Image (cartoon, rainbow over all chains, first blue to last red; front, side, top):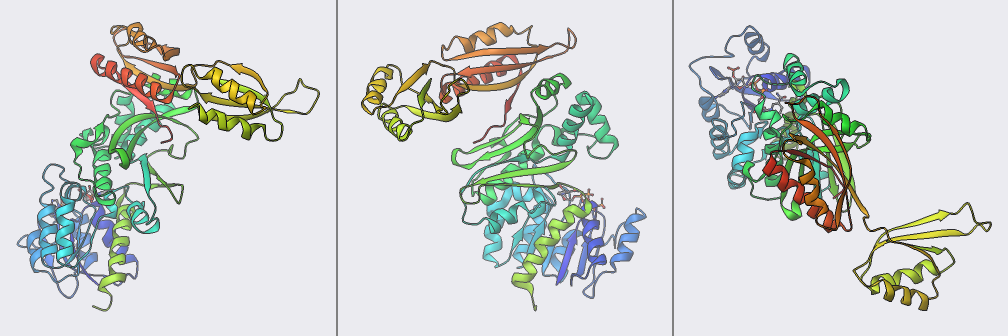
Length: 328
Length: 162
Ligand SMILES: NC(=O)c1ccc[n+]([C@@H]2O[C@H](COP(=O)([O-])OP(=O)(O)OC[C@H]3O[C@@H](n4cnc5c(N)ncnc54)[C@H](OP(=O)(O)O)[C@@H]3O)[C@@H](O)[C@H]2O)c1
């Protein structure tokens, strides 16, 4: 199976390391970062590309652009793992459209295109007879979308609620455990690389909100945008509030909730009993899916990380391989 | 409200029909072994919601069914919900916020614990509301949400079963 890889950062390198470490029958015929690209039908020398990247150099030839890779490389599946843009989804959206139009499958970890343009992209994929997969866009390593679309197909889902953002969960865990203020816990999260210099996207619940939009639009066929999400972040939480919750054997977590029947999409801090399965520690994610046949199912796992996110991307890749590409 | 009866064979089933006949809504059925009675009889409590003015009719129907009601507890505020509110609670007149809920007549703030770290910084409070029905509880929370928006308070609601 031949793949082209766009984006060679944390997730892209995680995918390449896994390909190098395992016998997955995957050949990379195209690779690009923001400044360069490689097209090689015989297979890119991944170890060398990785070494260049680790030296801080571009991965390939500055004369080859990501668009060149999308349009000219010979691949079965495009892996799109470039940065998220929640306003326009570009340039990723253009890359994905380009690959689908060429009749190539696409696997992405990028929330932008899926949150903003899923109906269009799905139609484009269907018209071209290819798959569009996006497991890694929601809760990193947790195979939530696969579980919903395959494992519990046939169930009616009455509610999904969960911890969709590891940064917020880390901050709240630390505020509860150590009585830290929000600012202190945020500073700690930054030091550990769990929070960005500008943490707005995480702490205001935008990231969690986008994941709800993705779930709503893909597994519930709703047509929602971030504006449809009732959203409250964690920036105003006080250590006293966490103590008041603690006094009743409860804690506070940032919870994303979808109730499809009434169209509720909500991200807000909530009081949760400490024994509740959604109360996970640190940067973990946890999601409960409430169904009619299967009852409640709770998934817990790493929502981010290089190899963890690569795991979800590779799962999608092998899914497509087993159903479609095999023998080609 | 609460109805208590002896758990004799058939009594529970006989009691349930009249309750639905008068439009009542059963919230819980609790079996309780009463330590004080010499006999090892079980007590059954039925916790239910009843539309106004239907109690007499219900008791009549129960008597007809041969159900022996031992005690009627008029616990009006059956639903409880605890929330946390953060903001400048004193500056924005906390008692007015509480009054807006109490004024409904069907919901009450039954407990309030407040922590004020420093005069200028926001305080945090845990508020317990009790209501007569689930719908009234929703209404009380709506009131609190509206007040919070107006007074720029952050409300943290519990994550409850759907
Ligand atoms: N990291 C996670 O744990 C995680 C989890 C779930 C989902 N995701 C999503 O996965 C995607 C990748 O995340 P990441 O953490 O790997 O990001 P990252 O470390 O910032 O890497 C992004 C990569 O994309 C390249 N790039 C930037 N602009 C590009 C462009 N216009 N065309 C082609 N390549 C471009 C960058 O090039 P340079 O190397 O030249 O800068 C870099 O190699 C994001 O959409 C993210 O939201 C990440």
